[in-house]
Amino acid sequence: MYVCLCHNVTDARIHQLVRTEGVSTMRELREHLGVGTQCGKCAKCAKDVLREAVSEARCEGACSGMLATA
Image 1: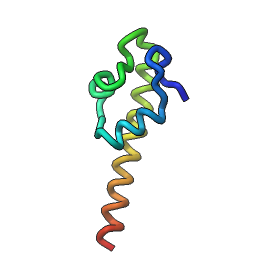
Image 2: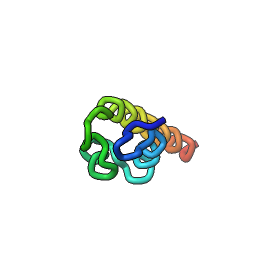
Image 3: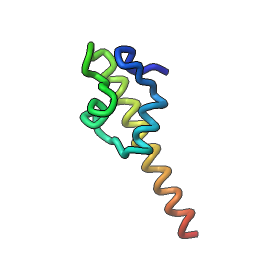
Image 4: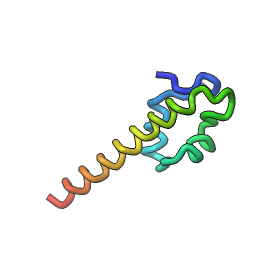
């Protein structure tokens, strides 16, 4: 789904950026993708997607850590 139409940013791109670059704040998201810098209508949705992506990344990291020790 598109999160930011002004900069053509999708939820998948945000999830990818969290996994590959460790982005975890709206400031970092703005710096990388320009989200929320044009009309601003996407800010709340982008924040929600970012929160979800960070949570998933933390969970994946915890799960892979537990598998490595098993």
